[in-house]
Image 1 (tube, rainbow, N blue to C red):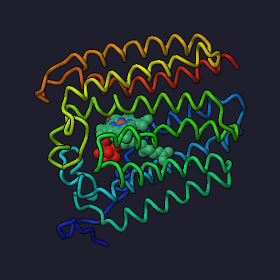
Image 2 (image 1 turned 45 degrees about the horizontal axis):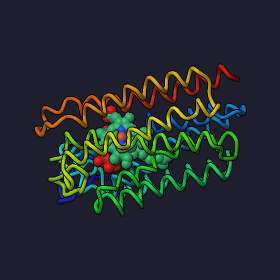
Image 3 (image 1 turned 45 degrees about the vertical axis):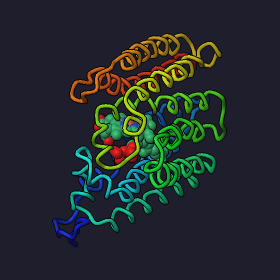
Length: 303
Ligand code: HEM
Ligand SMILES: CC(C)=CCC/C(C)=C/CC/C(C)=C/COP(=O)(O)OP(=O)(O)O
């Protein structure tokens, strides 16, 4: 079967690499890692096969959400340098295949989670897929610069899903983990959006720097970092973790605050020179990996 671009050009058929790209594999690594840490931090021992199945379902569900996101916004992706070479805008895959792949994979992941793990984790997985696809991608992304604050909640669900898979309930610690990722998303994304804002402006996406300017965006980056740091440290004084996590959270969040402050006090408007913004974006990813890793290390020591 041949693929057709949006302007009708026939190209080669999609191969597995295109289907993999449709899943946003690099972002998936962190989404799945936070889910795995949610599962491992739970105070119960889960059968390894059930645990593996739960992580597989989170991976497949998030991959499906990425595919449906790309199915819906092929027109936008075609307008941005960063995304123009994705399988749909580049004409390596037809939209129908992406839709079938996304719906099939999403349905499979939820059913498997419900049947093999538990209904609670399947329900939260469903909510996160729907949140990312319907609330973020379809509804908010093209309408409001608050798109990533509200829609970003989708990416905060995996630790809750992991915990629910292990315990079949929701407790305060996974709610705090949700809050950490929820409050982390604005500095993570707005740091990046500052140095790629012309891409979003050209594509007509109302991201914060495009709509409200770089000053407001920089202020908002610091504004969200403060409660994020508080949520990250909170499990320690609340007695839910020990010092391994606590010290890691204090140090990691301290560095995050410093880098956010540098972004906030930067007045550079030339995208090519926005070094603090690039550093904060890169650090945001390291931050979440190490913070969640420290949580698991801490809980293993406590156990
Ligand atoms: C609405 C919320 C979010 C938005 C708008 C957003 C946006 C982006 C964008 C545009 C990139 C850069 C390029 C790319 O597509 O790879 C990126 C990179 C990344 N994001 Fe996010 N992100 C969000 C939430 C998350 C969440 C919740 C996670 C994981 C917990 C995450 C993990 C990552 C990672 C690991 C990368 C680096 C990927 C790479 O190296 O290419 N993001 N994000
Ligand atoms: C468990 C589960 C279903 C989780 C799904 C949540 C998920 C995939 C979160 C990642 C968020 C993300 C990649 C946003 C990218 O924004 P964008 O789509 O605006 O980025 P783009 O411009 O690169 O397409």
